[in-house]
Amino acid sequence: FKAKAGGTGERGMALLLVVSMIALLSVVIIRFGRSMQLAVADASHYQSGVMLESTAHSGVDVGMAVLLNDLELSEFDSFLDSWSLLEEVPLDLGAEQAGLVISIDDLDGRFPINSLVALVGEGKNQGQNLDGMSPELAREVLLRLLQSELFAVEDETEAREIVDSLTDWIDGDDEETDYGAESSYYDSLEKPLAPRNGPVEFIDELLQVKGISRDLLYGNDEKLPLVEYINVVNRNGKININTAPVALIQALDERISEEETEGLDEYRRDEDNMDALADSSWFAGYLPGDIEGSELQGILTTGSSHFMIESQASYQERFMTMKAIIERVSDSEMKLVSLKVD
Image (cartoon, rainbow, N blue to C red):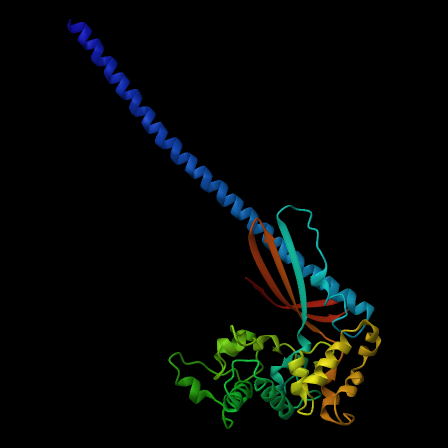
């Protein structure tokens, strides 16, 4: 009887041990499975990230190649050029669940912020604008643009504050203009900072300038973004009349009406007028009076050097946008000014 009881007890202990081992192995297997799932997910996430970044970079490269090729075809730039139409071209990447959209904007068609001050310095890197738009004209143009009611600017006083504050931010002295701000204002802030006292280098830098809000710079549900009408890279003080926004063209001279700018925009987008766009003199027909000898004649151009390439890549329901600011130095040289990834 004792032998049987002992045997039964041993078998019971063995069974309990087996059950415990199975339970332990089950936990290990479950944890291993979860670890493998995480590893696979991480690997997939990494793979899609690499795919996105590579695709976005490829879009920038394609944009640069198109810009170089365009300069070989013609020395002037307009909305009729291949770079401007690139967004409409379908791109076959040869990969499932992958997509790429490339668009290029002409930054030299926008208002050159740094023209608010005569940028005297050593060499072209300092960006002298004495042969283009004068600071006086630049302030008038920007003031009219800000008062167009397209942007988050309340009234003329606020517009003048923005123009004067920008001027003080760029110029090298510490003397405040009528509505502007210098170091005494910036030192009094909760987080003190120093004005640039030189050319603006980055668009986001403008958010530090007195009077410039995020709603003004990047727009909101009711107002347009000022950032799409200005640039900080063009320092020759000239504007490409073939690609300038209609509101900016109207701000160039108080005599230009909205009706005239609409006709002007239709003209420069008509393929039949492409050859005429090689010279800025075509603009004379839309400006009341004779522009010969006026300052406008000296600030208009039809050729551009600075562009923004926006490359939007998608892969497996993930997205990446890469924005590259490019300087087209010649038909064989491109310079990457900045690169931003969202």
